[in-house]
Length: 390
Image 1: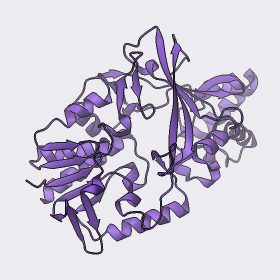
Image 2 (image 1 turned 180 degrees about the vertical axis):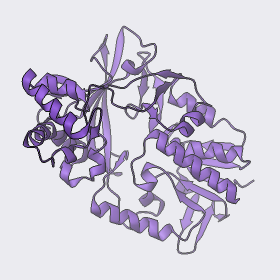
Image 3 (image 1 turned 90 degrees about the horizontal axis):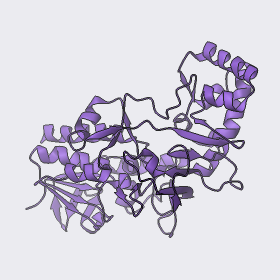
Image 4 (image 1 turned 30 degrees about the horizontal axis):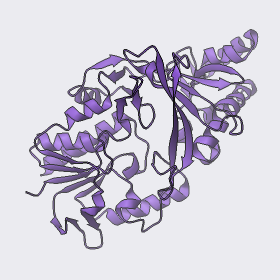
C-alpha cells in the first residue's frame, strides 16, 4: 500500500514528525541516504568503550517543556552541564567569556574595574552579544570588547565560517555571548541532560512503530520527484498526493536549478589517547589558522556517565567549505548566512510555494540554525498540523 506520508531524512526533524504522524494513524516511509538513523546526532560505543558522536558533540539542552516531554518518552536521561574552555594567550579560560575569564587574563585591579563596569552597564548574569559590547559608549568596555573579539571571536570565526565576524549574520556571533557573571556553563537552560544510552538508542525507540518504514542507504530522489511547474509529486513514477516532509538540502530537492547553496562542513581527526586528554569535553582554539588550523578538540568521554579510565577518544575538528563533489568537506553542517546565499534560498522556497503537500523542515531544508530542542518543537508542530487538516 502507498504511504500517507513520505519523509526524507531520519534525523530529529524526520524522526519526530514520523512518530507523530504514525501515532495519528498515518503510514510513513522514511528515506535515509546514510546507513544509520539519528542524523548528525548518531553515536555509538567505539573500541575504547567511549560513546563517540560521529558528527561532533551533541548535548541536549532546552527550556521547552514540550521538547523535553516528547523525547523523554524514548529515553531516560542523566544530568550533564556542558563546559567549554578556550585557548587564549597560552591559558585555558571559560567560554563564553565571563568574569572568571576576565580574572584569568587580566591583573586583579583591572579585572575588578571591568567587572564593575559590566555589571553597571548590563546587570548580573546578562548575556551580551560581542558586537553589542563593541558599540558601548564607555571606552574601557569597548577596549575589553576588542580584546575578547580578537582572542575569542575573530580567528575562530574566520576558521569556522571562512568569513570575518562582520560579514556573517549577527545571529551567528550572538550564539556565543559574553556573560556578566561567574556561570561557566556553556548553556543556561533549565533542562540539560544526555540520553542514558545515547542518541541513537533514543531514535531507535522513536522509530519503532508498525506504521513507520525506515529505508536506509536510500537516495530519496531515486524514488521521489517533486515537479513544482506541474504542482505534483511522483513516488516511484506514480502520482502521490500524500504529505512530503523534506529535511535535506533544498537545492538538491530541485536538482540545483538555482545553483548550490553555501554551507560549512567539518572533518574530524579522531585519535585514541591514554587516560584523560583535557579537563572538559570541548576546548576551543580561537587562534590564527597558522597557529592551530583546527577550531576545537572534543574529548567524548568527558560527557559520558560511566567513562572508561584506560583509554580516551578525542576528535580534532577542521572546518571546510562544503562541496558535494569533493572527498573532504562533503557533509553539510551549517548554512552560511550571507546575502547571496539567502537570495538563492528564497528562490528555491518561492518555486515550491504552490505545492501545499511539500514541507521543508530542519536546518538544511529551511536554511536556518536549529538546536535539537527547537527542531523537535518545530517537527511536532508541523506533524500535528498535518494531522488536524487530514
